[in-house]
Image 1 (tube, rainbow, N blue to C red):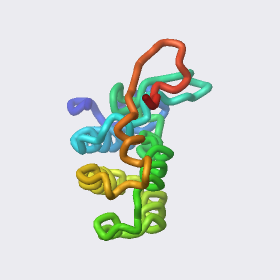
Image 2 (image 1 turned 30 degrees about the vertical axis):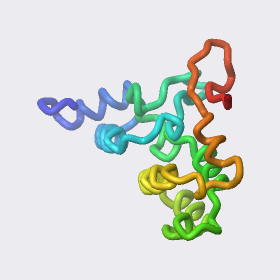
Image 3 (image 1 turned 135 degrees about the vertical axis):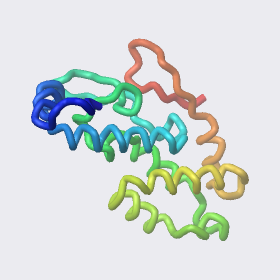
Amino acid sequence: MFTKLPSDLNDLITYFAWGMRYNDVFLRACIACEVNNWDLPEMFIRKHRMDWSLMEIESPLRIFSPQFSPESWFRMDFVFMLLDMLDFRRKDVREHGDRASWVRRIKDDWTTVHAFNLFYMKMLCSDSNWKKYGLRGVLGFEYSDLPGKTSHYFLY
C-alpha cells in the first residue's frame, strides 16, 4: 500500500482512515484479493453491510473496507439453505461428507466457503442430487438491484 513511508506513518494513516494498524489492513486487503480469485457465485457474497456507525456500505469485496472480518463477507444463511436443499441420501452428495459435517466445517472456518462452492458446482450437474424442489429453487434465484427493495434476491 504505502511502501516508501515509514511504518509509524503507515500506522497513523491507516488508523486515521479505518481505525486499524497498517499490518491488519494489509492482511485484510490480501485476503480480499485472494477471495476475489475464488470466483464465487454472486449469491454467496453479501452485497451490503449494515453498520450503524457507518450506515450501509458496499461489500468489502467490491469496495475495500477492512472494518469487517472476512467471515462476515459471505451469505452463510444462503449456504446453509443450499445445504438443506441437497439430498444427502444420494451417494454423490454424501461423497464429500454429510450435512452436519459441512455445517460444522463452515461454522468453524469461513474459508470452507471455497470448498463448498466447488461442491455446489459439482452438485448442479444433476437434478437427482437435490430434494424434490431443491434444484428448481436454486436455479430460480436471481439478483435484482431494484431501488427500495429490502431483499435483492427473489424467486421466480
